[in-house]
Length: 334
Image 1 (cartoon, rainbow, N blue to C red):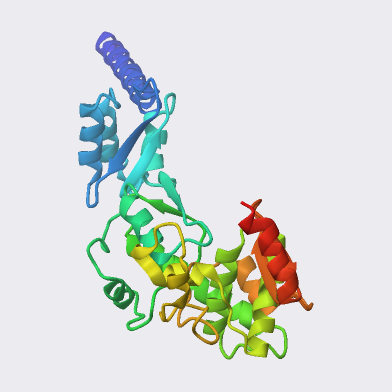
Image 2 (cartoon, rainbow, N blue to C red):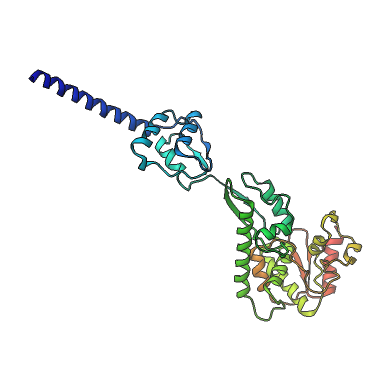
């Protein structure tokens, strides 16, 4: 009986050692590096479960020991991550458990698109249409339909979207980026308008937005924006026409071929500021915060005219005679 007991003890010990060795091997497979030589993208499909993802990773040769992860699901289901749909970047050297933890994290692959200051809404829409990984809900929609989807039915879209760099993940809708840009512009405009200078000849935040768009299109030199704003504000105060070429160009739309003729300056369009009094009816571009600030904090002075010098900056003049001399100097001799 003693011999049988010894044999049983030996067998039990061997079984325990085998179980322990098996457990250690199983654990080593869970933390073994994945089979990748270079970074790769993997997308967790919407609605995909744990077993489907493990099978796909095994089929792609990324998880060499899929059995270990299936066993994990049976023995320790509480340890399984809650997978989040989206794209992830897998890195060589990470373990299988690290990979699964990544697929349940918020570390999704991100993309970005930049809307430059001074672009038009049409240009922004073209950028969104060409952006990879976005869900394109707005393709083929009119501007009015886009605004209706953004709960701004009847609003002219120009000027209402804040130019900036926007981050997104695969599967995000272009409408979501538009909504972010719209709400940011609305919040920025409200903030800037609340801190405006006294006695401006502007009746509403929307007029400030229109003026900011003119400033944005007139100069790309940051320090000139308040000076440009000062000229426009003084012209509005004196009842002078703004005579800003970017507004004329905006009104010409597709007819603009690179030059403005004298006939163009006489054409009575709503945006021809050589003909109309005051501001055009809508913004002509997407202004940034600096242009908005300039519109409500114009530079004081006496200048009423400016002309491009050809190097990106402008010459400012107080009188028409001085302005004509500047035009001869910087424009006509070229």
